[in-house]
Image (cartoon, rainbow, N blue to C red; front, side, top):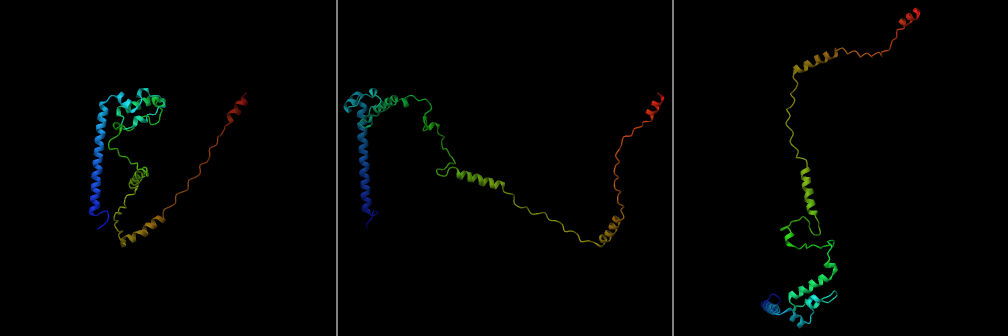
Amino acid sequence: MSGANDFWSRRRAAVQAEQDAEAQTLAARAEAEQQADLDARDDAQILADLNLPDPEDLVLGDDIRGFMTKAVPDRLRRRALRRLWRLNPVLANLDGLVDYGEDYTDSATVVENLQTAYQVGKGMMAHLQEMARDTDETDAPPPDEPLPAVDPVPAATPDSTQEEPETILALEHVEPEAPPTASVPRRMQFDFSACDTDNRRI
């Protein structure tokens, strides 16, 4: 039997994984011992052994890549970075107008279990489609209700057929109403007889 799934292939892979894990454990142990030795030593002695300047003596433009090696303890690395930060006027003199000047990674300002309808590459399309579907269901007309049953019209009886001619004759003998007369417009009338009598007396 051959292939990567046979017994000896799996055995060799397991032995290799054990060796890799053991090597990582030894490397981590050596690094921890080295870090403990550096923590016990003085900063001035470490800087002299590594041929590095004092972090407080750094000026703008100095190369600090020597402080980024594993042989330098974390406390000296942080001192060098703080010094470089203060030397840069862009970083040292914040005016409050810089973009991304705040720390947006602070877990205290992040809402726990935040849920959003936004999807990468789709935006809020699914949320808008769901809202449109709900609106269509709300605006849909109600289902047709069955019409109430109507009683059938009773068949005409002989008595009702005999009464119809009398009703028609009675309507034929009704006299039509006289048309309304047009109203005569009123005119002003003047009487001058009294005026003539007064003039004769004078």
